[in-house]
Length: 409
Image (tube, rainbow, N blue to C red; front, side, top):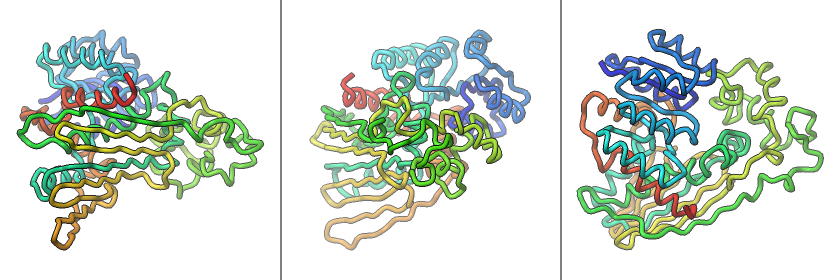
């Protein structure tokens, strides 16, 4: 029997809890969260698990399982991982690991000394879409990779929820935007330029630019209230209105963010949600928040061997999607992850479209969450770690360093 403990039972923590526990030989031994509603809901589902409402009590109890899943707030990851490794846990660790390069180096050294397996949740590598991209690139179908152009379109609604009103709004309480949101993308770019079995192509240089342009007090419409539902005259017209984003069923946020806005495992009734939003964190005017993270970034990278890549990330998009175009010496490959289609253009031949079959779609990221949990489970059950294709702490160390350089750390 494989035993797991889980600290952090928010939206990401529940993904890993559900994805791993679906296997009959996985037993949940312990649960920890500071939110009583989250802890209570998980406790009802796994009554055999010991419950803890504080990190201190949880770690004071010693090693409670074979594996610990850490899915807490960004600033907690390093501290909790360091403590857990000292207790002898293997780890599944939510990204980003830390905003401090020295802490990441120390954690890698400790994991090696303890002979512990640490898998970091860069789930996009495991998605059906990007797994297919990697297979095609590695097959040589488009020749040698020369250049990659990658876009992350965050979505105006998603950015407002997570990075203006939400937990990742301010670098005093969370990792910088480029690390918190885009470490996925830097991980993908690093991975895609590598050739199987060949020496590592490190990133040799990075240049990056970004600004907080729009979500500032001087851009607020005239007469805007501090909270949307406190008599703001723009509540019906502002695209970022809390009424539009959380209280209308047609909103892209309605299907997943209302529970987060309420701080509960499930969305409350509409009337109660309105009350919470009236003076709550997620009901604030987006122009009058305590946010300081940038709303757009551009980065350019040069890898060994002359391969170049660019990353563009922006709050100012309608949809929430990634677009990737890879230029090779014999053709090009491009697609958008949400369409699950890849366009392959080999030089001198007619283009073709490959449709990617969705697998393990019990949660988000186009099946990536489920695929990551399945890959982690196989390792937990005694399978070998693939050092080139799995997001171990050492792989994360490489891609995080690219972000650190982009941020000037």
